[in-house]
Image (cartoon, rainbow, N blue to C red; front, top):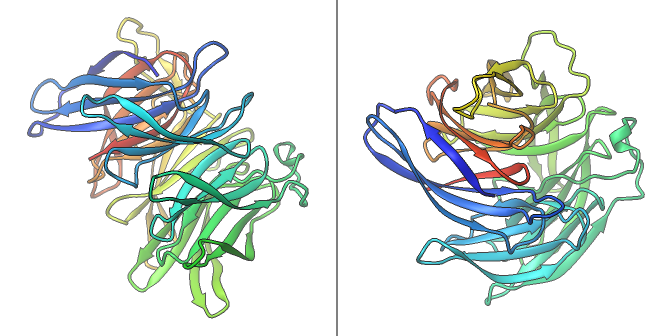
Length: 395
C-alpha cells in the first residue's frame, strides 16, 4: 500500500514514536502490499516517516500476525483469483522486509491464530468453509497438520449464507487449551480442544447463534475468576457475550447479553455488516466496527478537498463483572468499510482502516482510556491501490 498526503494535528504530549503496520488488498493490476511507517507524536506538530511498502507476500494480503516477535510477521494471502498462501516475512535492519517462507494453502484464508506455545498455527478460511492447522518448525517453516471442512453443512437463511460455511476468525481462549472459530455461514462458532503433545484439535459442541446472525469475529476476556467470550455478528449487527465455564467435558458457553453494534438507539440496520471486535488493553471495554451503513459525515482526509465524506462507525461498550455490556459511544470511523482496527499499547490511540473509502484511508484518533470514548482525529492517510484491511501498532 502506498501512502500519500499524510497529515497530522498536534498532540499535547511529550514526544513519542510508534510504528504502524498495515496490509491492503491489491487490484487487477497491482499486488496488495504491507506498509510500515513511524508516527511521531509530540508537543506541536506530529510527523511521519514512511519506512517500507512490501508486495511480495501475495496478491491479496488480508491478515498480519506479529506475535512471533523478532521482526517476524506472518501474512496470509486471501487470493480471490489466485492461489492462497501463508508466508513469513522478516524485518531487516534498514526497515525493509524479506520473504523467508511461503507455502500454498487452502483458498480464502482470512485470519490466523498461533496456539500451543506458538508451536502451531490455525487458519480460518472464509470462501472454502474450513479450518486448517500447521505445525511450525525450528526453521520457521509451516507444515500442514489437519483440515476440517464445513462447506456442505447446513447453512443459514440470509443470502450471504446460501453457499454454506464461511469461517472468519480464529481465537485462542485464556487458558491456551481451546480454539474457537466463528462461522458466518452456519450461524455457529466452532470449538476445539488442543492436544498439547501433537498440536491436533478435537471438536467440541458448537456455540449456536440465532438464525441469520452470522458470527464473524470474537474476543475472550478474563475478568477476575470469570471468563467471557464476546462475538460480533456481521449479518444482524449484534454483539453477544457468553460466560465460559470450564468442565471436564470442555468449555460451556452461557449467553449473558445481546446488544446492537449500533448502541441502544432504535435503528434499521438492514444491509449493515459488523466486522471487528477487540477488548481494550485495560480489559474494561469491548470495541466493534460497523460497515455498509454510514451514519456520520466527517471532514475529507484530503486537505485539498473541503467536501465532507460519509463515515461508518465504531461502537464501544463497557464490560461488567457479569459479562453484561453498558453502552458508551458510537463514533465515526473516519470513512467507509472499517474491516479492521487496532489500539496502541496503552489504548490511547485507535487506528482504523477505512478500506471502502475512495480513496481508502487510514485514520488515527485519540481515545480516552478512562471513559473509553474515541475523541478527535489526529492523523489521516490517503492510500493508493486496494483497501486497507489490517492495522497493527508495533510497540
